[in-house]
Figure 1 (cartoon, rainbow, N blue to C red):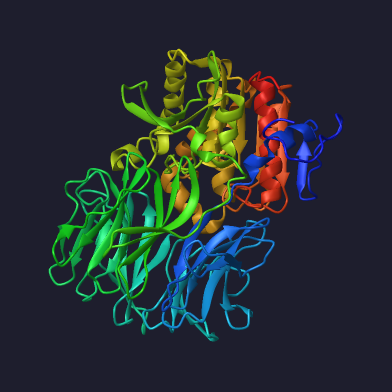
Figure 2: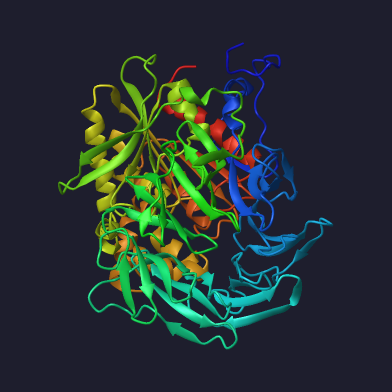
Length: 640
């Protein structure tokens, strides 16, 4: 028995792994139980994320998974037991306590990954669960008023595509009312004014263009706070009312390549910039309940850096050193100077921490299981750069296998989605098996169009520039060939969503330079994708990819679509999709599978009937992991 095998007896030599009833397999060979048993500990990582502080007690709600899906749990004290509160076959999406008494919380849940989330009230005294939305439309979970008597959320129930604003008292679902009608699917409530008379809302047009509005809670009247700039497109990120109600703290790229932290004064309509010395994006902000402290995170070349401003003194507070990684969900505990957050690093799965400003003490609230593996031995990422076809510098993160693996190592290039996403060096989870056990290098590029590198970089793949990002991968293949420890003859390309398109595009442009590719919930034809993606997001995607209703753009999109170049895909392909995907409909997978098979190219196809845009259920994710390991071992020539 190897060190990675479970204590159970070795399975018979001919024993294979049976898929569950929700998985449909085509062209995938039987997966040996022995393979699964050897690496199954890599499927047992858990994580924990801060969902909500209790308003009166030093305790919290977290999201974590004990069974097949992520559910809401209660943690009463640091490193205390996790008491599971929700038990659904589907994962829940966050949870927020009622903000004054905390005797109930509101959470969201969809069905089978379809993203048509519904909101529910969970009563802590009884465990009773009450549906708050219509059960059919797509709804955001919403945000609480300061009084705790109302929530504002968005819903597509009126037209199916417009994210209108609704207000509800969760204790009285019959109070639900339409506050104001909007056009488009890019509307998001951000905050309530101090007196609960106004709601701050963002209108998202694209990652480079958005607007802030004030909505009167009684009348639904809308006031545009940030008119269109005649010179530049401006994007706003996070925003929150100041404690005195005289302005907003917000992030914006107005007059800058990056999202800066600013104060916007209502009376003067002027901006005062607070982070002019930081040339990276400010991401999340959180104002303490007393209005004295403003916490924010900065995306510094992919790594999160936490800051806290003392607004009264106008200076930063020195914080204790935190591990290098990613920080999410910063939230102040009510009536305190304690800041909670979720921290992830290359050697630590997501867990919940807090910092108390008075003492500088860092408190760990959760310690998630790691399948018995020593995560301190997991490889750390290395930031690498290469020159693309137009001499632009592109960067990515490389995970090199440990030194015991000799000779040139095969490479998996994993391209993020979005395309406005960014790979950031968090915890690899299951993927740690590739460098640690198989000796495979992992390389995560941030090609042009990725966020985090300025608003100009974001636009370099828009519209007719789409394939310039594919050329960035071509330049990366050249860079790999120049590395003495990487094997340019054994390269596999993979990616999810837009990254799935990229993996297919690389397979059409550079088939002679890769061994295989994996397309996970990816776009195969931009025209059929735009015509069939859910209506609430169609216009938002047209801004990025181009409008298929324009004849010239339509022809361009057809010309570059992998489906129409599938005869060039000569190397093995693995396609993965969820049947209920609302973003990239499952037809994108079916048509590329059928077309590539006509080339007599090996195609593996895995369909999950109870998933959407990615696999969220552990049973399904585990089977996909085992199949992927077998695919990579088979086509990168890695011995058992």
